[in-house]
Amino acid sequence: MVDDDSFAMPEQFNQNMSLPEVFEKYGYSTLGLFGFPMPFMASKTWFMKHRVWADEPAETLSEYYRSWRKSKDKTFAYLHLGDLHAPVEPPQRFIEARDVDTDLPHLPVIKKYTRSYNASNECKYYRKNKLRLYQAALDYVSESLRKLSKDENTLFVLIGDHGEAFWEHYQIDHEFTDSRPNYGVGHGGTPFDKVARVPVGTNNKKLQPSGGYASLIDLPATLIEYIFNENIDTSGMSWRHNLPEDRAVLCEGVRYGPERKAVYKNGKKLIHSKHDNISLAACVTDDGENFDPNIDVTKLSHSLPDSWEQNSEGSTSQMVQDQLEALGYK
Image 1 (cartoon, rainbow, N blue to C red):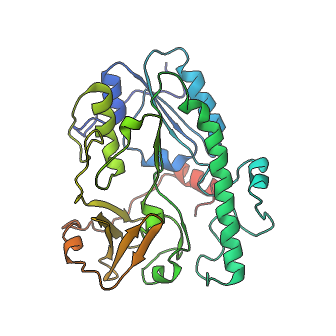
Image 2: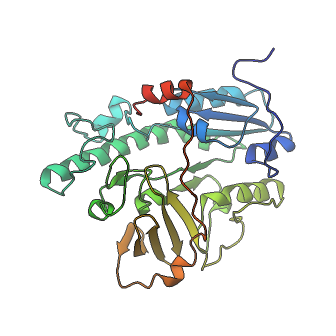
């Protein structure tokens, strides 16, 4: 008999070891906590113990982790929070501290101005308060995780799996096919900089990347080399060494309609949709990207994949459908 929140894992078909598996090889106990179902369903690894909630705040996951690790010597844990994922509903005191106008309709979800944003004063006011709401949620998450980052003998790494657009390029986004449709706001569509570039925070300065562009795919190689002094076969690079200045990093939006790929290299960026036959080049700044039709896209386009995946359809179990509907998905 096994506990409800543990399971036996069959032999893996992928020869490359995942990050939790590497830690297990070195005698670590591993834990995966997911504040909502979607990231768990997208996970391609496994943990000795895991738990998934329908929609649970950061504080619950943080306290669960701290309780779990008390009796253990060596631990590796992955916590995927949902507090900045719609619906965004931080505790009231954080909302009041950011002076959010909660009378505005549908502020916690992505529903209003998905097709009609036009930079009017009304739209700008809505955008300002939506940003305030997300900042309030970030304040709550930061407070909930502060204890974890200060735990003795704990390496703490904070990342985002994606960013969020707030109508920075709503006009340009109308050029792309979107199955929702949904233009200029949220994530899953066009990989504008606000969606593609995510923060990385750590309590160890030795793990901060330097040199060229870093990528989330670098994390396994970085952590394993730093902790175990071992090199593994991954597609990423270790941040223990300077990254090549001319490195090209990729991202894509594939969730809603045709895929849109993006490449960053040498301070420039290219977004390309094969389906829509659109290529947009930009100079990357600290606060986003500035699109410029005069940028030569030839060199950037050579860094995009040679092959493009064909669209395919799959089936979803009734249990998963019920979970998604409970979260507002259709």
